[in-house]
Length: 163
Image (cartoon, rainbow, N blue to C red; front, side):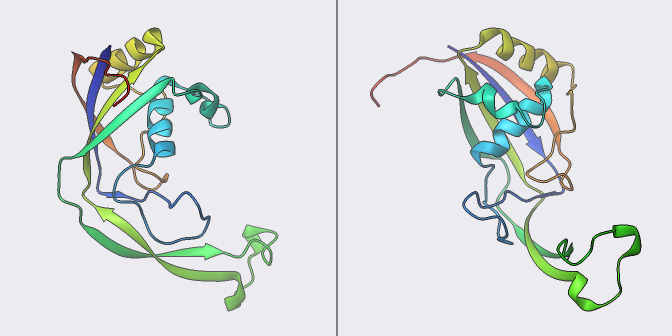
């Protein structure tokens, strides 16, 4: 079994809590869907169809920390889309905007281990990493948290069943 290893890092990261849509808190490591998004961005999977490529445990991941977890809070302005119909003509009253202190990881760095039953896709991922290319921007959770990455290597792993 081939395992592709790479590192991702950035100034900030925010991995939304998956069971809520409005929590200001972040997970300390990339969530499964964030990992799907990172791999999908390398391989060019379309935004609204990339989850189909990760069904039936066809991809497996492991994550390790390369820097200690450090958090900070940054105020973000949210717009009440129920009140504001046209952003170019946004009223100035307070009910249009809400400011929330979002929790961010500061200067995170992760090592990601990836394997897949789709060897052709795994080879494509490895080549993209080696050439320092991606089809879409790599982000750490949300679009405001751009990431950089580095290919570490490809290794043979043993498949231990029933662990």
